[in-house]
Length: 235
Image 1 (cartoon, rainbow, N blue to C red):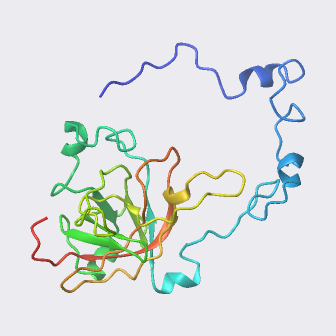
Image 2 (image 1 turned 45 degrees about the vertical axis):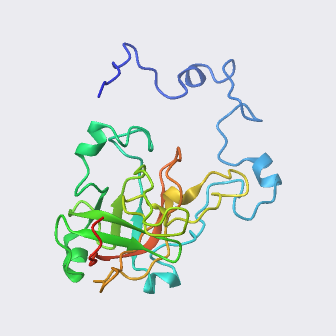
């Protein structure tokens, strides 16, 4: 991996504007930093007001659906590849466990589900399911699981909605925009609706988020469930 050199003279954010806000106006209607945007407010979008505001996510641990899907899935951008590019490269492959993407969860959540480090687990919800390899870490909060995006989609039954064997969280996330204004894919940010994380029987009961693997923004969390994978299939 090559690292770019640090700039010799790093400039702080909005350096020119801060030095001379009259001559170096910003490309906003007022030419200033705008906490409130009259233009955005004028669109009348119920999911994108003209000022910073907390809007309840589609899925989160405070939602009613959390009783069914008690784990909040975060699917971040990977450090071993660029989105899904180079996933088959040696650097990305070296980070896999059992040839699958690692999923991190708190030891307390793992103990309740009889999940041990290195176990193959199934993440699942009403939208999809995928396999990943468990990594136990107290750096993850209880009730939260984390898996990076970018694992190449590897369905058990190509051409059909089926289990992804490689650990692509996009199979779990909703395919909808972040707002009427942005339309960015927020599969990366929200918790997927899944069942509770619990030990599975023959098929496994692991829950997480999914859909596609590309996206320039970090995924929002979604409700999910997770369980150990018990199957005779040699994936």
